[in-house]
Length: 231
Length: 80
Picture 1: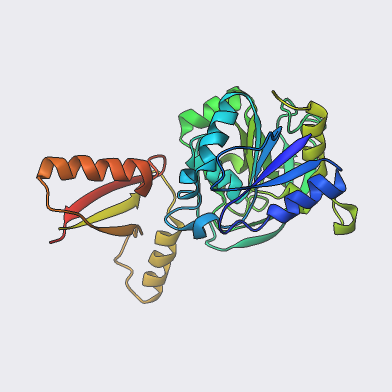
Picture 2 (picture 1 turned 90 degrees about the vertical axis):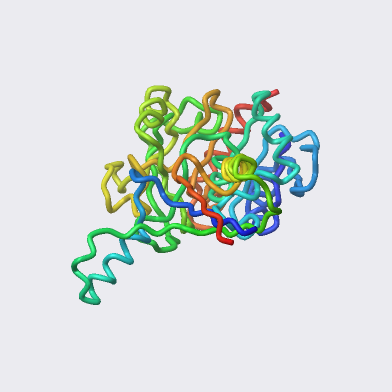
């Protein structure tokens, strides 16, 4: 399976993603420069973490106008699988591919540490190798990761099973302490309507290898590979 | 002409920056201040145009780029 990893000026996790896909999971991987107009035959597109276009104005606000995003939006409409990690999640939201908004962390601090996540939906190509309620550990590194959506949108996300992950404590409990960025309803990751686009703030790419002491993130990539090419 | 676009969080959206400023003002002894909201100002230099055309233009710029309608509201004023 071929993974296309989009590189914006200011992306900084593209090599983490490339390494996991290519060297840990032995899949095909390529970089896609933001000025490219094609996805080079990718079966899955990853928008990696970083600070695309310097996070100017709002995180992800400029990136949505990069030429490659036209192809990414078209790919999503055709059912192509897109994984947005951290800044990639912010870009997917600004591009209108996922609902809601990501704003400054409640404590105004850049949060860089491991957090616990509860799998809320195993019914997606990104989570099919997980069990609902399964608790994972993954690192986060963000200043603007506080998820916000209006009550109507939240109700719809919940009803349609589109909340993929929530921040939780070690045992899966939802507490304010376990949700340091202050996300509404502890939401850490959401799916689009068709379930082919996932955005999440935590980094599966930084937790996919034994040598790093954590392989929990690997399960997302393995789910995608098991699901196979979407088109 | 210069146009000043003022972008603020909507009233239902938590503004942690505003809250932090409020706490600092209270520490300085200004306990009479009850709320602070922090936003941003974007100043645009645009060619001279009619009020109606400017209204349309600013609205378009805000909807397309300057403002995220999910969390932010905007207003604008002609600065000079």
